[in-house]
Length: 258
View 1 (tube, rainbow, N blue to C red):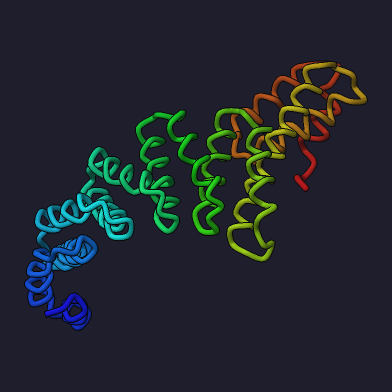
View 2 (view 1 turned 45 degrees about the vertical axis):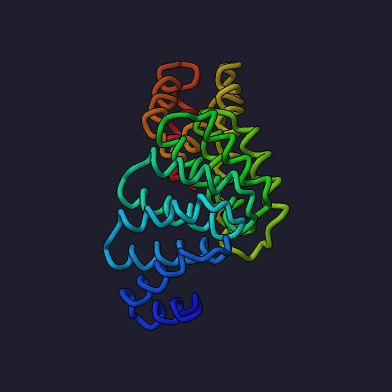
């Protein structure tokens, strides 16, 4: 029986029969056929609920070193461990995929490793993996990595760096796409954070009645746009406590938000 017949049986729902044929094909003297058979066996065993058997088959495919089926098997293995909530084992498998250099699988593996590092509170590793995804230029995964990296940079107060990441990626995207809209929205938030910094500097620089009330209002309202309500209230309160500013700031506070 051929591998093609095993695949056909799997596709028509005869998983047990397909597993038997894939197991027979593991005896092949052709490395590529052995690798393909091992991956096929891993997939059908997973569908049959034999997780451990599927993982053993994945490792059989990985150990062949086949340039196509080894990284695919590592990908399959990584997903199995992720579903089981086993990050260390998933990371090992994703590293195998990433090191394969396979263009179809490397971006996804690097993105997964970035997320695992971020979840493990290892920001340096996460940034490295996000940057690797972006460098691939993959149309599906690079925008996701750019978004995650930019969000990380914004959270760390590195607004200018976040803007550079977003701008570079936006130049590669078509405007009427979801990815473009998502990154453009984050770019807008980055500009708001930059504005908060500028308005804060203006408020701190002077208490001039012809400048500070406007800066206070802009700062407080922009903080609210970033869901920083407590800080916004503190800005209003400090300004209201200044007799020289109280009247003008009160008028601006009572004015409806635009």
